[in-house]
Length: 234
Image 1 (spheres, rainbow, N blue to C red):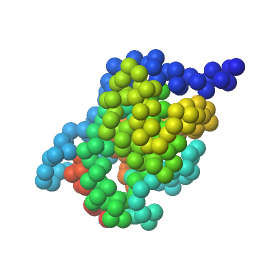
Image 2: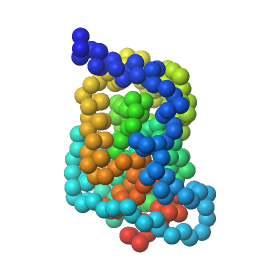
Image 3: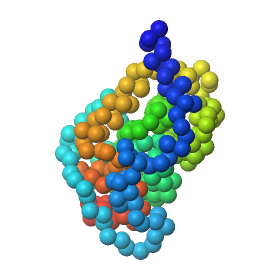
Image 4: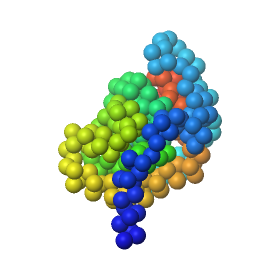
């Protein structure tokens, strides 16, 4: 009985969690590091200075296998590797994925210059649920992440997040049964939380956080800011 209750907890929490709390910020404090470099509009044109990194990590250690298989885009031998830690309910993460990611993919990922690895760093049960559904979507992981970020306000701030997520999941091919099976998969939930815990070991405190060839940057950077970091590494 106790195990059943534990497995159902995330489904119940989707309706119980106050919606207003979810979009307040993208860190434990709701402010601070996530906004540190979120200063340039994605529509900015012209050259910009590269943001200063806030730390470094060992890339070999960073790229060691974790609790879940990596979800990555781009050539394995790309000269630049970006590891992004994100939360599905983070408004700054959504801003990056809507405004900057398409240009990053077109200019750098699809051209073999950058390999992007996306890792889960959920701050609340709704973010956990979003990532679990993306994982259950198998080879549609990035497509599911893309839809969830683009429609973030429709489910992350909804009174009935469960119903909103179910509607999105059905468009991705989920049935109600597979939807509930995914969100009651305790091992998957534990593994998503393990990915977050490992991210914290690397100093991740807010989202989005990017490690670009081992250097740490926080905030929803514009494509101009990312280009200023990436281009000298090519």
